[in-house]
Image 1 (cartoon, rainbow, N blue to C red):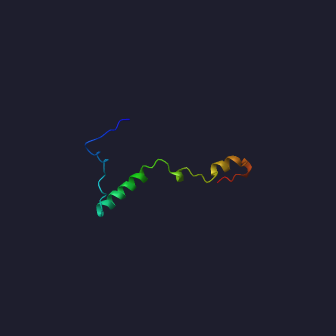
Image 2 (image 1 turned 135 degrees about the vertical axis):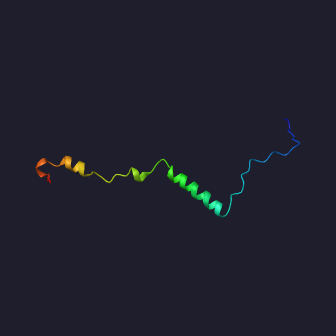
Image 3 (image 1 turned 60 degrees about the vertical axis):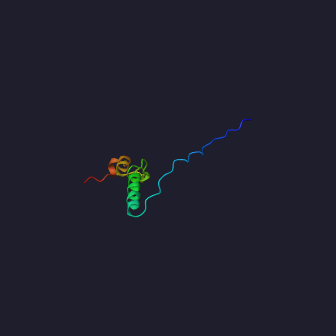
Length: 69
């Protein structure tokens, strides 16, 4: 069995800067939330159906019962 010995300590992982505080942080958070909300691909409220509309009702009624104006 071989043992590996290094002379230098391992390099630390890439670190991120500490998050900004104060008004800049609020501005960055606002725009981040805006972009996420504006470009979110799925909006369930756009696909919600409430049931058959007036065109479906008109198609199913016989001609004698329609009220013409």
